[in-house]
Image (tube, rainbow, N blue to C red):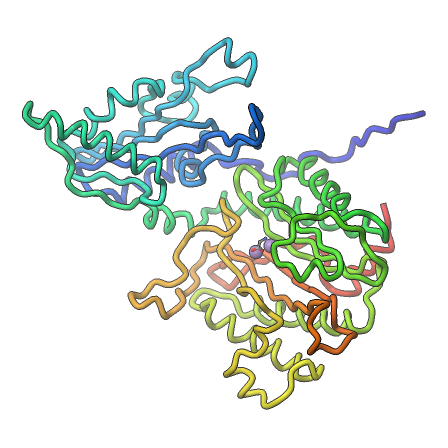
Length: 456
Ligand code: GLY
Ligand code: MN
Ligand code: MN
């Protein structure tokens, strides 16, 4: 038997990670937000046990990653701002030959300073003796209040400082939540971050193409999942950004379906929501297509309605618009369309007032995207949280309208049942309007059917 090795492109042109100097810039931006005479503490993630003594693939804490680019577990970043002299100090695991021979190389303290631009670096074991000294005499401590391990540690260190008050120690009195500050920084992407997201979108688009070309009646959903992972990985996106949803027929009506364990049926649609992760940054793309390569008549009209809605909404994106406004537009398109198809009945104005289309469009229109697939950043910025915030250049978000018609909905005409459709693209807000990062996954009926004729 001849084994043919696949020698095609493995690394696409374009950046595959951020330069390490960019993480120093992220730290500088955080330093700018810190008050004088303060300290900020950010913890890395720990490995998570999958079973007995094996772990899940390591995933770094995303705030920590944003500020360091450092991808080892259990480290701690300390940012010190005294007399306007910002110092970034890393505590990390030590070089250890016998550990490294089993589990892999560590960066160690010397390289942490040389390569990652930290001002100082210590082994983790020194943390508990050094931290109270750093805290002593400062006024403010920043840390992420939602990180319970870090909160506990901070209180332990503070009580240590307090216990030496008689020797003249002074405990910081103000604790400030670092999360809202870093969330806002992460919300606006730099040119390099956008380039990286362009890249991971392109890779993910190739994976969606491959899925369309591989899909066939009788295959298991998880067999398509492996095709996606294969394509992500061979272009440098080693991990999916989230568990891929590969949902045939009525499974598409389960929004977070990840079982992927059933076989694909003739005349069913297949909904795939999957994106790769490249150097920490996520793509989040959904495509829906017919398993056998040809949309049926009811699938065609519903698909076209979702696509028209998505195109209408995306074309309105520009600085100053809000998710609230885009939602209104999506609801108008879908409601009118469902009325035309007699899936809804009644008066359009009343149906809009009643949010009637939400029976079939059961999730939000989109979300911020970045290091996390549902990325950080407030969706509302005024005090009463009523008004959606206006878009500005550099935000990246998804637009993902859908329609879901479950098999067990007796109110629906039979022909619609078992159809679940979502179309999801990733959009950057630019000064002029928007850029759609999702350029190479077919989404018109003609393009999908044409690609699916070319099986691989
Ligand atoms: N893939 C998750 C989402 O679209 O929100
Ligand atoms: Mn999404
Ligand atoms: Mn998605």
